[in-house]
Length: 382
Ligand code: PLP
Image (tube, rainbow, N blue to C red; front, side, top):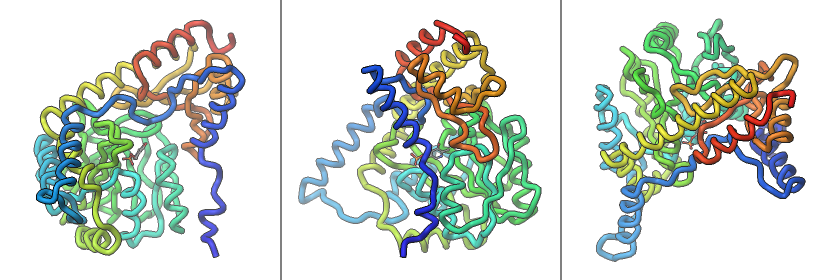
């Protein structure tokens, strides 16, 4: 028998978007331009490429070949992550940091060590939180938006997913807002699963939940190099499971020991280089580049289309309100059919509402400028 939680799922939003983009290409004999997805487009830092190439060559020599590594992570990679936190004035022990193959697996797998039945999930949010909770037979409590940020749960839950900066609304929680989440979780004995996949985009606000007092007592932080260092294909990230959450660190170790043989050595060597001075400089440049794209797109959508945009200051995403009586799929099709522009209909990220689309700065500058040029040709009714 196959688990029906898997067979009864709806069509994944990204498959539906690809279908319409392919259809457009067939009809127009040219691909549409894509400003909806959250995939990196800039190349990795040369220092990462060099480190990985050297590591590959080392594996091809008898003297320097190595086999399995630690399932918890390569020591130099873990130290590089520790240093990254030190730079934010957060002290972590190396035993609290675990290498990962990116955030998505961790966001799903973390539920395995929690004795948690009811999981609070922001709505809208990255669909994986909800979909995985449902696949795992959990009860999902949607946390509805208050001004494009989630509000605290109104009923008891065992764990909460929180993404900062948010996907898809492109907003960022302030220091005092994050304090409220941490205080709530400590007071109610709730685990906070904090997704900081986009933290490199945050400026002058907390990037890590551990910058909030006492957060180590309730929060597990999951981060990745996907968006910061163009590792979406390479796959490398890190998960912090503090010793201050009773039993959590040991439980996560046990899980890793029983179920994994660690993360690709080459990825972790690349990750170590990505967290070096040169690597971080590269991240800063890429982040600025994507934020510039966001500015161009936001301005074009506001000035030319008369659309109201949210987010996009501490985030690569802009959450765009649809015109009155227009659904997110209708606006998606309008932009695709009239301008050859692919966005992301917000309904794919929300069960509660259907009146926004997500626009992403993860594109080449030329793509953002071309989108702007096309949008300048007319407003929504053109
Ligand atoms: N968290 C959020 C909010 C995301 O949007 C994504 C990917 O788009 C991920 C996590 C997964 O990232 P990774 O490539 O590290 O698995």
